[in-house]
Length: 231
Image (cartoon, rainbow, N blue to C red; front, side):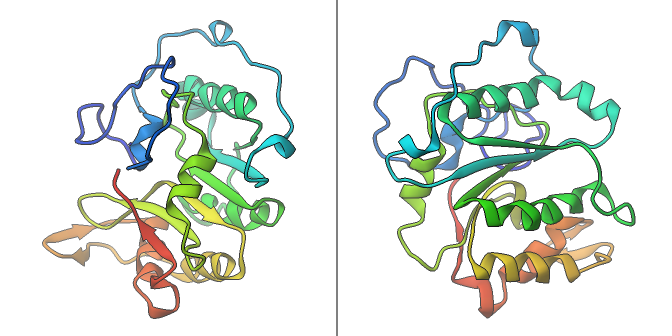
């Protein structure tokens, strides 16, 4: 499922769909990409990359990118197979793959770089799908535009995201290129430093970027443009 994945057994997560599946049918949840955080044992040389098709061939004419970040040599080595799975998936479907390896704000924890990177690259695309470094693509048949088409029928929607047990899950989400998205990113980034032991319901939370995104998603200025969908 989309979002920060802690274990393959987490409800709604870790479903491995067959690569031979052909009919897309109705898109019910973002979990249909079958994202997994389990470390794969496949060597990168096993994965084959198909010739990259032109994005002009997409049936909805949208330009899409997948963005991930993995900062630090230790994490880049640990999650190499996850990055490779995303690269192969993007090549297969004609998406740009943006891989951020260095912090864009050394004064903050690495998590905040996702907002900086989105701000930098969003202008070049119709939609960007952000995915955490530890998430592997397990279902190569599902296309990002299928999720966008299913969940963005309301023109007000600028972000498609899921919830976890506490609040929004900033591990995997779609962001639309529009003014509200840029305003949302700017506002979320200003919510720094995050408050320690921030109360949400019965939980005391210690967030990074998720703190800023959560606060802004609840404000009237942005609330009707943030679509929460099933994991």
